[in-house]
Each structure stands twice: as C-alpha cells, then as structure tokens.
Image (cartoon, rainbow, N blue to C red; front, top):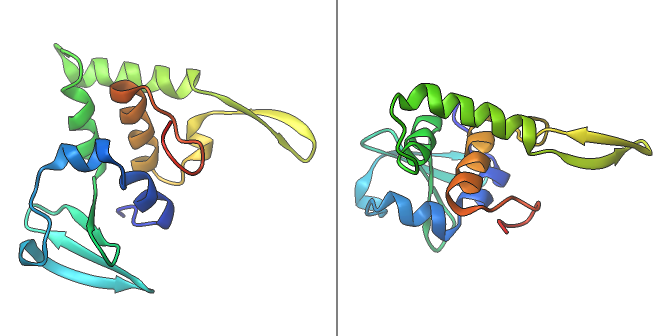
Length: 139
C-alpha cells in the first residue's frame, strides 16, 4: 500500500522532490480523490498520488518513481544491479546512534523509516542532493 502518512507528506513537500515531477498539479488532473481522516488525497491518471495541503498539491512519489529518479543520477549500465548495490550500501552505512532505554543503539535507516517509500526517498535525497532527514526537514 502506498505511504500516505503525515511524515511522508512532510518529507515530500520540498523543492527537490516537487521540482522533479513537473506534472501540472491541479484539480482538473485528478482521476479520483478520497479522504483519509482529515487528509485529502488525489490520484492522477498515471497512478501517482498527490496530497492537498489546503494551499497546494504535494506529489507523493511511489517506490518505482523514486527508483527512476535516482537511476538517472548516475550512468548505471545494468542500472538495476548497480542501483540495488548502492541502495544496500546506503542502508548499511547510513547509521545513526541514539539512546533507547539509556543504552546507545546504532540504527540503520530502515529502522527509522516507516515504509519503503520513506527509505527510498532518504536514499534519493542522499544520492542526488547529499541531504538527510533530521526529523523536521532535509539538511
């Protein structure tokens, strides 16, 4: 199921991701829309999800769209194998240390992410823009 969580919306609502899409995001482009609690989502003709903030749409890239974004960053020859290798390297090396119950624990990004979309988004932002999520914004 597509990640439509509040945190993923916040992570996607940045210039780097929104500039990549270039789709005209307005009400006329929606094929369908639905409410999830107080959140209003739309689905475009190509299956992409958008979120209405009340003032603008936020494109929520699917995992395949995130993989496509990063595949264009490097000249991957057999890009799926190279992409998979780089993604696994990222997941192993991008660690954080924090205290859980007073004990220092090293956490991989996969432990921080709530979905594969969030994990792939973190990889895209690191690979393309050398940015990491600090819990509030990309820096």
